[in-house]
Amino acid sequence: VTTLDAHLAGGRGPDAADLADLVRALAAAGVTIADELARAALIGQLGTTGDTNVQGEKVKKLDVWANDVVVAALDATGRACTLVSEEMEEIRHRPERCAGGRFAVCFDPVDGSSNLDVNGIVGTIFSVLPRRGAGADHARADALQPGTAQVAAGYIMYGPSTLLMLTTGDGVHGFTLDRAQGVWIRTHTNVRIPARGRTYSINDGNFTRWPDGVRGFVEHIRAIDVASGRPYTARYAGSLVMDVHRTLLEGGIYLYPEDAAGSGKQSTGKLRLMYECSPMGMLVESAGGAASTGRARVRELAPTSPHQRVPLLIGSLEDVRLAEEFYAARRA
Ligand code: AHM
Ligand code: MG
Image 1 (tube, protein in one colour):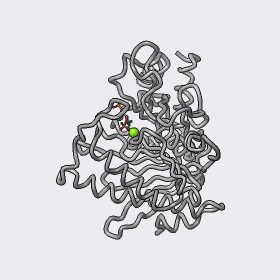
Image 2 (cartoon, helix red, strand yellow; image 1 turned 60 degrees about the horizontal axis):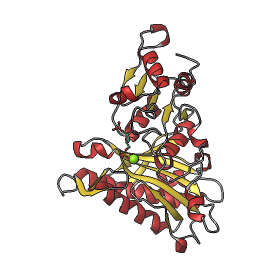
Image 3 (spheres, rainbow, N blue to C red; image 1 turned 60 degrees about the vertical axis):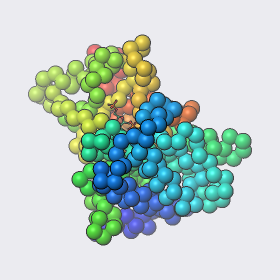
Image 4 (cartoon, helix red, strand yellow; image 1 turned 90 degrees about the vertical axis):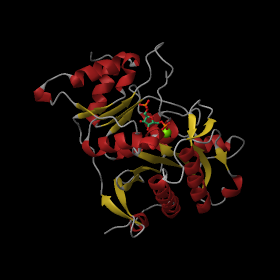
């Protein structure tokens, strides 16, 4: 039996111990969040706060509460001096924590929060970047790095069990929370995503707004061709952690494309680069898969703002490459 602590103790490199502190803090926040989710209906923690955030979305009580939990856990380590969160409009830079704080952490405390009020699966997503900043614009230099700079990425999935999936650049490993003992046990070692899957995951309600490449690709994988394993089957939870987790283990593709020009409001896609697409990209690539905008590798994008949205096509290598061919109109 290998615990998360033992796994982290095997980390190499000069920053391994500090990084382990951060991961332990995020895992501890995950235990607290899992407990709260389990009793949210009993203690009045479902529903909205009554506020609307800058992005025009109704703020859920658990979003705000969980953000405070993650921030407090990271602050207590003294290792993260720059924080970016879906729930915080501004980059949060704490100069007094920079002495021992070698990292910037980007996170979404409760992703998939439309599932909260229906007892659906949600998750916490995180991305760890090395600290870069110096000079006047140091907070932005820390926060806005391409996904290739990440030193760790992961998510905590609050499902029938609570599961932490993690990469520190050395494969993807999963740890299931043993609630009775209060420890995380490694249950998934060196996860590899199948080169091709049989499942696609996309919000079909956006059909009229999909770009042509996505329409063509989805039509292709829905068409019957027994020899090439088509049609694919459809699965969509509306919770990125759930949908990516299934894709990671079983293969296939998840898509959240941009709206076609002139057809809608999400011309850059919906999902956020820094704390949704980039960490999921590191995880899936580390398992042998791919993460693309349709036209470029997600992890190579140079971010311009902390809440930037980008299109996301993620999953099995062959499925993502095929979707890119449709995007480039090399296939129709
Ligand atoms: P959120 O951060 O506001 O929860 O939005 C992100 C979520 C993802 O978990 C999920 O994949 C996607 O939004 C679902 O969006 P939609 O409801 O438009 O299909
Ligand atoms: Mg989110």
